[in-house]
Image (cartoon, rainbow, N blue to C red; front, side, top):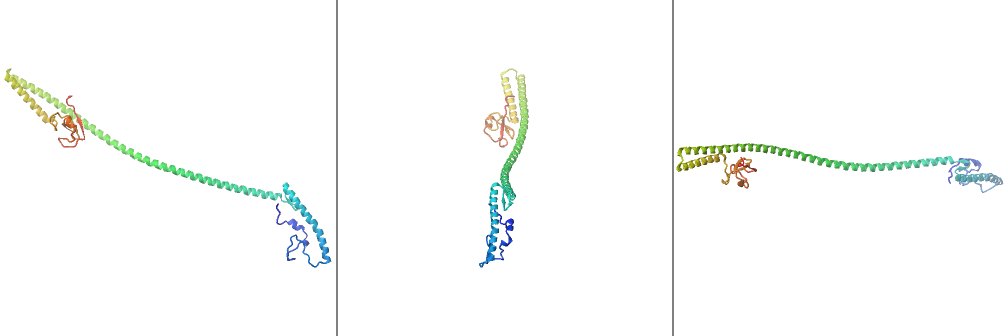
Length: 287
């Protein structure tokens, strides 16, 4: 139950003559009753009786108002000393509700800010992680690009080398064709010389035995002379063993100077003493 600390209606309804002022007495009386002197006269006694008769209805009225205030408080209508406080209490209650709603809104706003800060922090961390991954992938991509460029350059080098080797092989093929054509021409020349020598021997010596022997000797000398000239010119014998025909072409010096047996284990050209990088077997018997 609430009572106002000061009620103007209650204080103003008490007669002024019954209110004890602070300057009239050295003591403050709780019920605002007059302070009587110790020496009471008959007149003062009569005044006291009259005051009590007037003050009793006032107290009864105030007690009745207090009872009405309690009844009105339980029923929702607030009145005290004849004044209705229900509107003031409702305004106070609305003000309290407004303050509570404002405080709850501030709390909710603070909660939303905290939640947004947490979400922003999480998003920032994820973005930073993604940026680091992108930077790492960019470095890997740059390394792969450099690797592709180096492979392209290496491929271009191998292509140029292949084209050079192809040109070298073409030149060697042309040279071999020329050598083989020269060999065939030499064979035809040998056959022609032998035929001429045989005819000359027959015409000179007739059909006796000495003539035949002389003819064979002359033909053999002619054949050996031609073959020796062809061997000196073309170098058909192996320069390592000297026993078999040279059929292995050495690269990069391009000397046809080894047989198949010597070409399999020798790594130095016997003509120019250069290191062999690879060799090519030439089959001269097919032409």
